[in-house]
Image 1 (cartoon, helix red, strand yellow):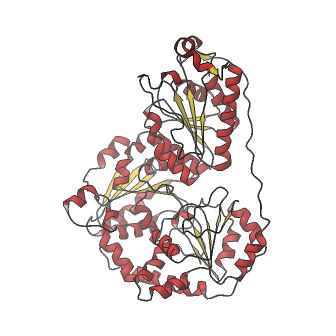
Image 2 (cartoon, helix red, strand yellow; image 1 turned 135 degrees about the vertical axis):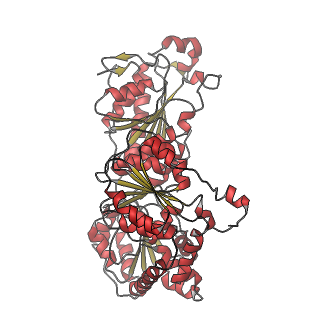
Image 3 (tube, helix red, strand yellow; image 1 turned 120 degrees about the vertical axis):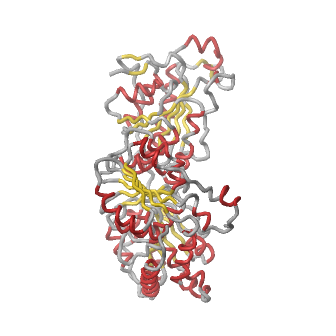
Length: 583
């Protein structure tokens, strides 16, 4: 096996291997050659080559999302590193352990006019779990150090030795990688390398100090106070955001679902299922907003206790409701952080939900209440009205999503783009075996395709990406790699632009609105499908959608894309009309 001749590159590879970080996504470059050599020459690592750094980072994020383990991305120096930022921000707010490793120029070549150099140290400091700024070896290219910056190897007047430098680098590598393992946050490792970059040796230069991650103790000494409050409350609301499939033990979900004093609100990205849960939040809240009894109904829905866990919430309506009608108690369960989303947070339980429920439900009891029965009758009513509405509307986004949801095969992985896509998916039920993911940390459209392609690599069943036209075009480089599975599928809802802006306040029918907000487009995606080897199907009516869907999911001979073209200027009227109709 070959190793880079540079000790720092050897150290980074050794630390990643020791911590079990085996998936490495590499973008081409020269400055990162020592790292590329180290990772690709060791059979322990599974290496992927993706040219576009922005796409590479989201691809890695998709893998980490599925494995729930750190995944590394490796790039060269300069602006290449900055292209990682959108995925890093997403990882930061979604608690996904992305390990960013950037090669850098030596410090004495920064800001002197050298090519492909920027200030890389701490560049992500506002959206990172830890930034490790490593030191350059003094036993490699020593003549250059003495020639250009002899003073750089003196710290406090004492000359740095390779041993002191290695001790610093080991400490920083341990601290950063353990942060990723302990907290699930992204981390950044910046490594300066001097030329020559491509030299290799047959044996490592030395040993490296590896320190294992340690977990913090859990304190539940005051749990009795909270179980007492829970047992007395007649109106408890459980609201769950993004949640990994099968993460919560079903016995805990059954306990919540069978308590008449509990209303459990979920979203498609919650991946939680029980007959008594409420999976379409806006279908409950929107009719209240339009009701002449708004105040009375919102007070009837207002919980005494709000219990939340999971990631971020899609529904803007539930956020607005809980901010206006705040619960007396809001408890959030999460090992790392608790956002005060509703400005009423009273307790953060810093532990995993299963661990919390295991202790909490030992002393919890169901409570007689009209809370669930009343809102359950409302839920049954809107479901009936929804079926009536769907039978009378013309072909549109809403009807397309309804049929798509009804046809997704069991056990599929579904990756959702943001904006309209994820919001329409909240309106309909899916087979409970379907696993749903979406980049809801920052809710951006910029990496949905790349994330889905990465996530598909480690999912045993096929992956379906449902996306809008702008999101798909924005991240078309997500298809520029050799890792797309033959059973990978995309449903592209093409409504000719940013249709969500027709739903939001401020819409008008001016040319200015269409150009700068809706950003209408008429590009032919068949060219992209041909370039990347996708079978391309086009459906322009309800009949064609129903005709294509069965065969689309059965095809396994290569990746395929079903483009569903819907009427740009009708979709918003159909969606807003739905909430009027069920009200």
